[in-house]
Amino acid sequence: MTVLNEAASLPTVLQALEQQTRLPDEVVVVDGGSTDGTLAMLHGYTGPLTLHVLQLPGANISQGRNAAIEAAAGSAIAITDAGVRLEPAWLAAL
Image (cartoon, rainbow, N blue to C red):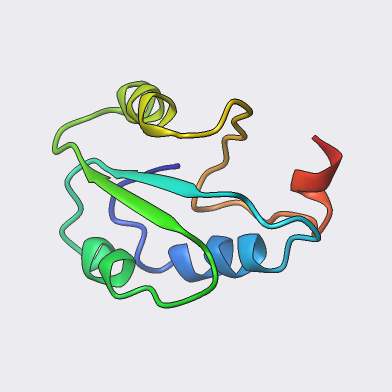
């Protein structure tokens, strides 16, 4: 997931990922240079998800996604964004 100043919407997508019927093995988040507390929120996360946070100031969404894919440990990758609402079975259905 690529983020830039998503402190307001990040809790919603993290909660949606936590409520998946099949939890993700990991969540790779690439921050493109947030100035609104997004990074502090990510680094302070204590929920059940395994978060990997990468900082790539100035990265656009494509560069961020490419970096996240490269950093991912799994062989299957699902991509989402901070501003979306996910159905609980979204990941399991993929």
